[in-house]
Length: 473
Ligand code: BG6
Image (cartoon, rainbow, N blue to C red; front, top):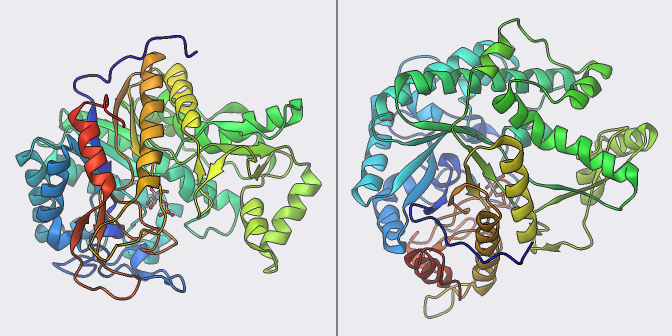
């Protein structure tokens, strides 16, 4: 419906950007921090490790000052659990606690609302070693205890907490390295219960709002065949609804639960679990969005063949990715011929963002916060020290416009926090894949001087924020 007159962004709209601790802080073993599962994972060939990253741990004041200069009213960052409790379940580390007080205070000094993710992929390694991480129910209590330390320390200063970043990606892409689907969905269930308990604690201990932070996207059927449409509905349950129906409605999406039971992969659920989930009540939904998903129907047989190929060691990249996204008898992820892509193959789909916002709002009726969205590509630093990233400006412009259209459609959108404020290390493609509006002067292996350089997108976003989203030229 584009006949409606575009509404303005609300006056209190949150403008900012995001980061995560292990991808930007560096200082991986300083001031008492314990190793996380990320720190000990094998480093991907050709990419940097996590030891220095953007050196945000030492330079956060400079970084937050630059965010203030851009006009940010929020900054989403994560607290590293192994900085607060180095071995995951033991003593609290006072230096870790102090560090995040300083980061939060620095934000507040400039009127920037801290939006704090409690867990962004960096489980304390000690818990993985001790009892297999999330496969053990013990991880629920250890996570809740850690969250309660954060609520007690920061709950009077932080208005917005996020529980777990992209739990759905961790489960779908088996980031925990689980051996069976049953084990994978058991770990996922433990995270769901842990998240629900953390929300209840947050509401008991402070006035802050709390939300889940999955990666959500609309799902397109590859063709208009009814089978593909059904595959898209099923895939929506697997990819999105499993993570939001559970926390918003306290129940597993039905068809997907039956699918898991049929495959003996449904988790063991203790009597009180569903009641805990039903009582959790998120105050809003935070979500990351990087383009639409497209699927087509696959038979049981085709699906199994795709999975086998994927694990055979002989699959090329596309076969590997397709196999990874295949659920035999349900769906297979496909490339969308109509969707633009970045040079790293990530979708560019601003209309999909509007659709996703509409679907979330119409299904859950909770305020929404976009906590990631962005264009990760290599940037070039010119000889006179500039970065002309017009491709990023174009990307941001189109997605911000889509936000405005969704607001016009009636969606309650609280803010836009793209990935990322400054360059940081990508999950798999090193620092060459840059997302920031502030350039960090380092290469993959040469740390150079780590100077902060304002890209063209810095000035563009500054202008956009100043006009509260009216000036997108
Ligand atoms: C999200 C994650 O999946 O996407 C971030 O929450 C990540 O941690 C971001 O960095 C971009 O993905 P990538 O793989 O390009 O770093």
